[in-house]
Structure formats: C-alpha cells, structure tokens
Image 1 (cartoon, rainbow, N blue to C red):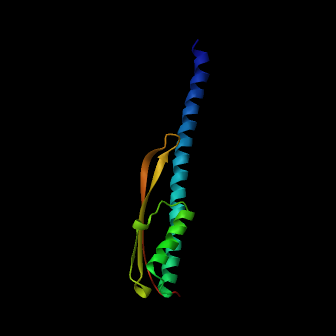
Image 2: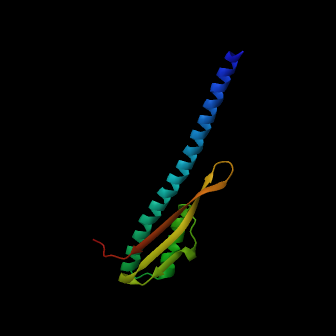
Image 3: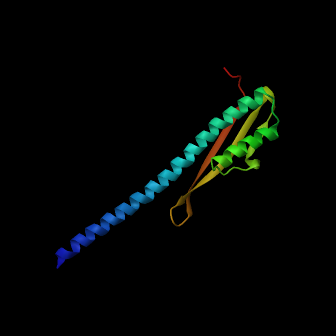
Length: 125
C-alpha cells in the first residue's frame, strides 16, 4: 500500500517547488521592473537638470516635467518629494521616494525599496 502514496507525494513536492519558484520569480520581476523604471527616471532627471540649468527654466516647470515623466513610468512620486535648489548653473534637484514590492495575490507589502537621486547642473560637453 505504500507504493501508491509515493507518486502523489512526489507530485505534491513538485507542485510546492513550482509555487515557490513562481512566487520568487514574481518578486524578482517586480523588483527588477521598479529598478529599471527608477533608472529611466534618473536618466531623465539628469537631462532635465542640464537643460533647465542651461536655459534657466523656473523650478515649477522643472518639477512639472519630472512629475509628468514619473507618471509616464508609473513611479509613485509627488511634488513634495522633489526638492529644487538654485537656478541656472547652481541648479540642484533631489528626488526621494519609496516603491512597495508586494506578495502576489495577497497584495501585502514584503519589501519597500527606497530610491534617491541628487542631480546637479554641469556644463554639457
């Protein structure tokens, strides 16, 4: 009678391993996706600061451009999380926000990834 239980037990162990693999794959995908979006936002921040500094753009316009890009990338960023100091060649922008990495199906936060960017104007080469 022990023989019929072994195939069921093996299938159950295999199913558990598959579920664990899917769980970690989803978490990894969510983490990598958040990091890639942040990288794109960082590149855009550098671009906006360089152009904004060279053209002496007002801080409200720079903030609006950053918020539009964040919305486009689905980055959870608000106007209060963007600090702009100086104008022209002294322009500096700091952005800090957090992104939640959630457990699939349960929608529970398992990890909160913190992102921070500090970008200052430097002459274009």
